[in-house]
Image: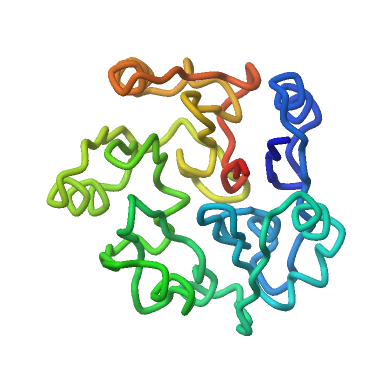
Length: 231
């Protein structure tokens, strides 16, 4: 069984669309140590690496039911004994992404587990690296952040740099494309209508060229729910 780990505030129609795609949806409760709008965002609460989930020790108890379900299905849960705060950059311990054995993120603020897991930790200025990036596979990413794009390209990664905007995250001015998506197998799932994004044609062509497909989970504007984590 494949799980889709999501923000509990994600609308039921999107969760139902995920279930219709064959996923069991786990809705994560908020962690009061993070800023309220992102307090239940998976990419702020945990790091998925292989079949292991890394999270905060304090959050493990809050989301006991959800983590117990994952453990019962063979997913290892490892807790970091650290406490975040709502203030950037003390909220981004798990906000990075891996391309094979390389991790991309703001190195001075990432959890110890990231430093241990990464053969190379590549520093980027954008602290919300996971939020800002759709990782299609080990050599293709989509991002609206130029610093991430430039750094990844220097590492030989194929990058689709898109226009900022087209993703909502209340009460902020905008959200991030990585937080409005999730990748499973050869499908990139979007939390709203990817067709409505200002860079849609560029995104569609890049995904197609990578041998994958884009799937809109609703007809609404894309919304940053902190990524859909598939495990």
